[in-house]
Length: 168
Image (tube, rainbow, N blue to C red):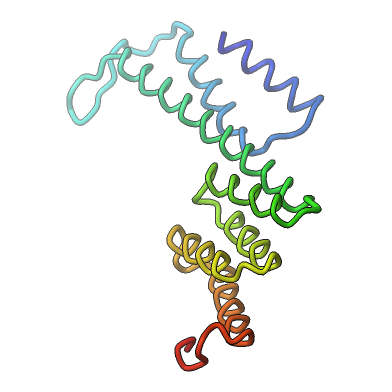
């Protein structure tokens, strides 16, 4: 089954579209497939001076592979939602698609940047502030999010929503 998955991935990579995010998953699957082939390697591996049964190593490899596949699927889903948000004609549906993207991958700072910009364009400065703050929660030193936060503060002062002294 894993061999068929690897072959299917290679065909999709060649004929459909390249999915660079999933490349590490391919190598995990190939490694997993290679571990199923009998070899001269001992059936037990050393780990912290103790013997580790091969079954545990294979189970850990399988769990890591499944986790990697789930992370790849979440990344692709978030990317598609961001594309939908960017290409949407309606500001409300654009903001909703960006919100979906941040739900799929909250650790992806570009999704917070796009979401905040779309909320700002829709006139929701408070929502844009919240989005930037949530993005800064995931990546506190991100320069793009910090710059966007400053721009939002300037916009809030210009609209009269925030006292200039409080913004500094």
